[in-house]
Image (tube, rainbow, N blue to C red; front, top):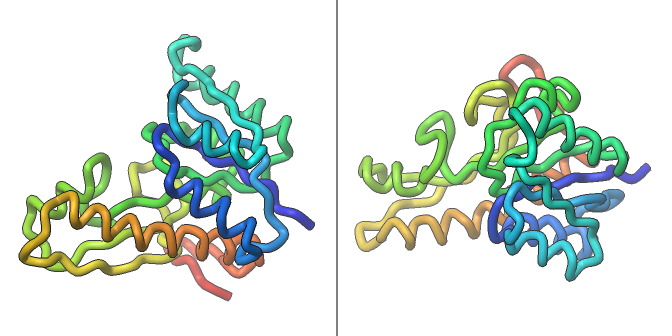
Length: 202
């Protein structure tokens, strides 16, 4: 059985590209990206989808009176495309309770820090400014909090004395492109089990 994936994006889509590449090269088997949904009309991620023949949809939040109605439209697109798994790849909005409720433990996010440290926006800059010696990235299931869901995989990245915040962000991104596809592969193969806050790799 094929797992149908939706990817929610807001920007350039480099993590989307890493998922596309790993499906196309056979690392992630029995999965397909059914639709890419953006809340930003000129997001480069939409062009990436088009180049690979993937359905791309722009849903403008300003067209809706509130977040709930906006996410109802997202749910409609997900249902129309028989989506089993949602990936947040640089999606810059908090997911609401209706969407989370419909896809409990089937929404996965990639975050450029070692959670629970440095949640929210500009996590790489936050870590750099704090002076940590080790940073990294986290793949986690999405719950009602901000970057608080059960953790699937984390990868450490050392902070070098010569680093700028951009240097650190670039090295973290390299690891994001490794652990995000790995997490999707585990999900598709049925090897992830959520027990409270703990994700067990079976």
